[in-house]
Image (tube, rainbow, N blue to C red; front, side, top):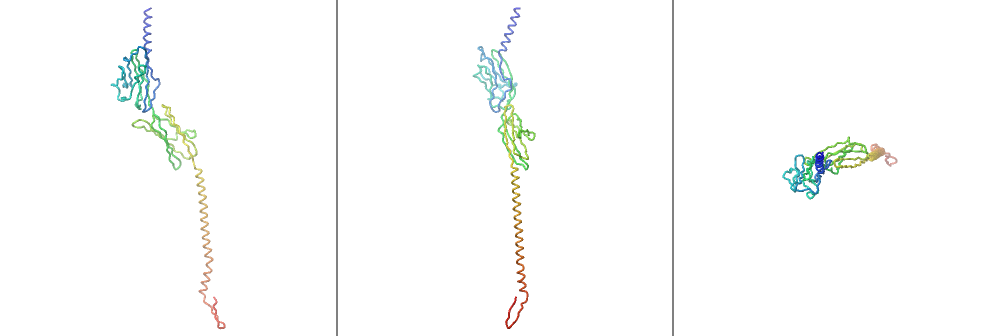
Length: 298
């Protein structure tokens, strides 16, 4: 009976010693920002019996070794070439149980599952967690061009990752299905350039809202576009111009008619005088002689 109790006590002691040594890594996926540094957290328990010389810290991504630490210093001979000069531990804090890794100049290719393995004179353990990379989209740029029957609006944003969710609103009504969106991925960086456009006809005074949502980073870009129409003013101006042109044409026609009438009347007045003169010239003169005197009657 005593032997059973002793065996059970030893088993519980071993389990207790094993469970006391537990490293801590993130439970959820860690998000890194493109082109910035990323801290991959990992801590382990340290007590009074802990010895630095017996501590081994290894970071891996799959089978690739990212960073190794043993014999009280970094050991990078087996480091994967993609991580050369980009990784470092907080060596001054290893004695406090900090095995976190700092990764510089993060790229989209750094996304994946990372493992932190720690072995000391008090125990050992290995845990993994996921890493995803994201990038903020730039301030949207608006371009517009006038059409024969309306206007074309184009909104562009770049340098972001992953692909965003876009939404267009007009006076709080969703008109996204009336838009067209094009995504282009940079061949070098892998970041996206997003272009979204809409053609609007029958423009009235209204408000459009462009919304870009980058979920992993919680980035929401919301920009309003105010539309103003001068169609009624242009119609009034056109009617005014038409009315003015009609009056001007009427005046010109009136002047022409008056001129024609004036010329006609003037000619009519001059016509009898010329006819009398002509008659007088053509008629033979009558000469009367009376008492030796002569006279000419015309």
